[in-house]
Image (cartoon, rainbow, N blue to C red; front, side, top):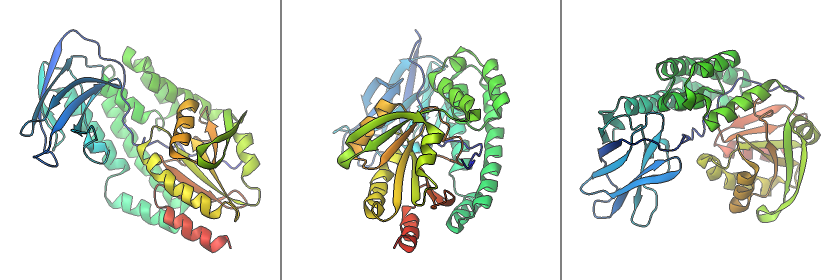
Length: 375
């Protein structure tokens, strides 16, 4: 198999994973302000911890008060909904505010994403802002990356990716060493686990407290890194029919299964995605349209799951009516062999199995390429 391995890092979606469950006897009071879309409508602030709603209150004249138990090891989140329960905003990274209840009371300015009275909350949101700026924020490096992607310059993209990864590693290393046993450290390690040098990753986790070593998300990421040096790993090939119906599921080895369908004389489009990733779900209708348009003309579309559980992937396939086959990369072997810089990440392989195009969102470019080459 061609080795597409690049020590990539996942944006997660740049999705921010909640950790742990609330556990403390002391109370933290959170008073905040927010600008709501329509002052004449009713809105509610909700504090979420470990996937459960901890406290809810109505936003009155742009102000809200929430209470939770104090625990510096746990990351919580404030989000806003309207009277119908619909999320305020488009679900983006800054439509929510990350909270660490490390103090008796704190004041939050949601519009500025700042908090006073809570050192760990300030550190958490500074971490998020700094890493977002490196990976997604506007600037010369992002302009270079876009230009290289549009030009199909894989070498330049790898060079820029390595440069960004080194900057990210440096920032995350500083945050982790300052927070080896609290929620900021947990979030730092979640962001760092895929890009940190492997031996350093092991050393840093050993230095961390129980909340680092026992966190299930970190444990799963470390397991993926352990699989990085494997020649192959467990996978499932899932044949999908119309409307997201599963025709069959077959256990296989990831690399062997992958090589059966790539480099075999047809174009192959890979959709690296996760059921947990909101941007992935938003792009899937566009992938479906491409699949429907070119399926009989020499294109094979394959979804490859990233850091996901089979039952969650299957539920998303049914819900989103995904109609292209899937490879459940259960041990992350394929994810470690491609230059993934966040999900969704799409690759177009030519009939010989070489990457000819890649990107995160602009599938119009894929469509134009396929129109020219599949006649």
